[in-house]
Image (cartoon, rainbow, N blue to C red; front, side):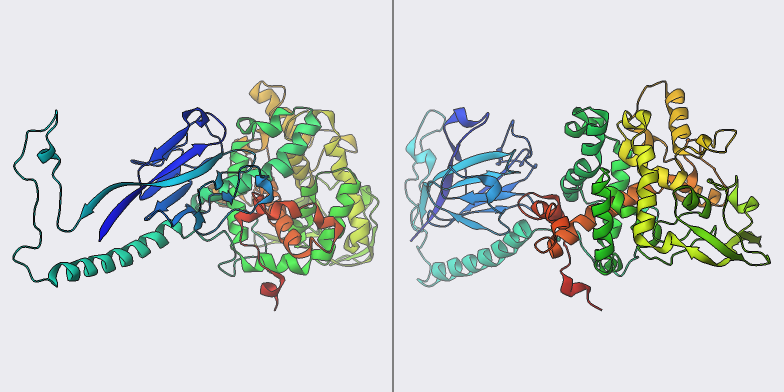
Length: 540
C-alpha cells in the first residue's frame, strides 16, 4: 500500500501567461488568484481575478476538482471553444478531466486555463523510507542508512490500526476544511424585518461587504454613470471608475446594504409592482434615466395618500404651488382655522414655508399640514402626477450646464427635492437651496468648469451633526446643498438597483418593461450579488 502525491499540470490558453506552456503546480491543494499566498499559482496580468479566486484539489489522479473561493466566478467547460458568457458560474466543486478548460473571473475579463493532467510525483512505502542522504550527492554526505524496518518489534496490527485512525482523522479534518474553503458566503438578502424605506445612511454604522462591490458598481455604471456619460458626451465617464463620484458610490453601497437586508423593503416592492412598472414606462418614454422611477418609492413608498407636515401630497409628494406650476390641479382646499377655501395661485412655494405658508401650522417646536382636504387634488392621480413630475425633472435634465456636469443623473434627482431654479418665475432673487444655483456656487468655489463628484463632495451633514441641524432650514454644514437634500439621491439609486433585480427575477418573463433587466440576473450580472426573494417569500 502506498500514499501518492499528485501535482497539477495546467496550460493558459491566452493572455500574458500563455507563453509559459505547461505549468506544473505542486498539489494536492492548488490555490489560484492574483495573490493566492505561499505555494499558490499567481495569475499575473489578468484583470477581474480576485486575490484568491479558486482552489484545485488533487488527492489522486482520478478525482481532480476545482471550486470557487467564496462567491468568485469560475466556469468549467469540456473544451476551450466556448462562449463563457453562456455558462453559469459553478457554486460547488466540479471534477476536471484532461482537456477540460475553466475560466476564472467575468467572461469578458479574467483568464482561461486548460487542465492537462494530474502528475504523480514521489512514493513512500510503509516498510521502506529511503534516505536522500544514503544516495549521496553533491550537497549531502554519504550515509550508512539504506533501509529502515518500521515493523521490527511491533505487533502486526499496530501499523494498520495507526494508519486507519490517521486516515479517519484526515477525512474529518479535510471535510471540515473543505467546507470552510468552498462554502460561498451568503449573498446579500433579507435577514431582518427592517424598514420599507431608509431615508438616510450613517456610514459609521453600516458595515460593507467587499464581495458585493463588483455587483453594485456594475449597477452604478448602468444606471448612473452610463446616462451621465451620454448626456455629457464623455464616454470615459462610463468606462473609467476613477472619474466616478467615489463618495456617492460609497453611500449607494451602504444604502443598498441596508435595503437589501430589510424584509419590509422587498415586500413593499412586490406590493407596488404595477405602479412602479407604469412609472418606469413613462420615464423611458420621456427619454429620462430609468433610475428616476424610484423617486416615488423614496417620496411616498408608492402611496397615493402619503402627505408631509408641509402639505406635500401624493405619489410624488408635490407641494401645492409646484403642482399648480406643472398643471396638476389642486383647488378648493379647506385649511384649519380659515373660513374660506384656498387654491394656490403661486408657481413656487413662499420662502421659508414652515414659517410663512398659510397651510403650515406651528407650535411646540413642530409643524404640521393644516389642509384638511381639497375639492380637487390631482396629486393623488398616478398618471397626472407622473406627467407633471417628468415635466419638472426634464427641465433639470436638459439644462446645458447640468448635462455637461458629468453628474446629470444625481443632480436631476436632487432637483425633485431641492427644486431646479425658482428664479425663472416669481423670485426676485436666487433661491439658494435650488440645485442649479447650488451647482453654480460649487463650480465657482472649486474653480472648475464641471464636476462629476459634485454631489458626494457636498454630503457634509452626517451622523449626530445632521441630527443637530435637521430642524434648521437650509443648513449646509459647509457644503452648498441644503441638509434636507444631501441624503436624498443616493437612496433612490440604491432602491432602483434592487428593484430592477426583484422585478426582473419575478416578472421579467411575463412583462416587457422588466425584460430589459433579465440579463443581469444570470452569468456575471449584478443581480447575482443579492439573494433576491421569490414571490412566495413575500406573501403575507
